[in-house]
Image 1 (cartoon, rainbow, N blue to C red):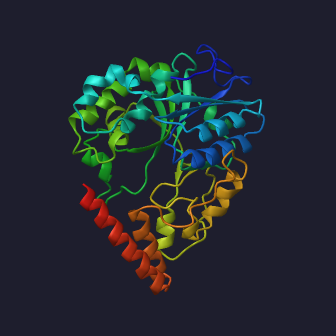
Image 2 (image 1 turned 180 degrees about the vertical axis):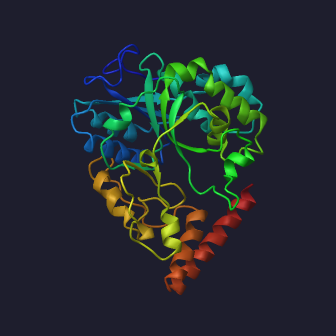
Amino acid sequence: MTSSASMLQNPAHSATAADAAWHIAFCVDNHYFRAMGAMLASMVANNPGRRFVFHVFAFAISEDNARRMRSVEENPNIKVVPHLVAQETFAEFGEMIAKSYYSLSTFTRLIVPATLKDHTDRVLYVDADMLCVGSLEELMGMDLDGTNALVVDDVGWETPTGRDGRYSVLGLKHPRYFNAGMLYINIPEWEKNKVSEAAIRALVSNPEKLTFNDQDALNIVLDGQARYIPVKWNYIYSMIADLKQGRQTMSPVGDARIIHFAGLVKPWIDWSGHAARELYLRYHTLSAWSDLPLDAAPLNHKEMRVYARFLIKRGNYACGLYWNARFLLTALRRKLRR
């Protein structure tokens, strides 16, 4: 595990102190470094003068991505610490993981607290498909005493009876279900309560039930043991919902500070035609990955199907039928390879 002593905060030193660095964690693969770069740039741009330590967890880091991360450190307020995740990183969970059918990537987010416990007492974990659009001072200064993590409600799970589809399916005692794309973790409390170990046990013992993998597992383990904060800290925005309605402009996001572009369609997808691309490009141009273009065409069978539907909905039937044929052929090839 690669680390650096520079700018790493002493656990005893309060993370809210004016001179303390903010520790931010990402878990990415080589396909998501570009997206992470925009999120990183957006956090820095909207929090000028703040000191950051960005922890990047990955199973592989290309030399190109490593070079780009090093270039970010030309800003004296920024340190980027790569954590190359190897099999032995999961040694303490090895027996449990060996009994499951999940890939190791499913568990990566769960090793962040244990890895960083000697460097800081709190870390903000964020997904790479997010953008920071305002100051994080309020969030980063929040009191974490007495809780494992600060979390935000997920969306889209309400039922006509008022029961939430996820928390009722999981049998949670408390009627709330959070999105794990943003976790502000109290590391000492998390480690004391062995949250990661319990989440791995939940994953291994209930694989069919946990559709959303480690997010479901964390909701089970942290049922009533996490503190909910306003949605502005993880504002989930569905571009695909807009596009299904034929809308290509962004809806108002209120006082959102972190926008989470969950779902299949992302703001770095040029073929969507959605205005979220403009917001993404604002920060992409500030990042170390700024020379990489947006995705001009669908990259997999799922994107091909979505693109075909969008084109047909917009009346472009010829192109829509072409991409639908591409989707069917690609999907068939994938099925035959299994």
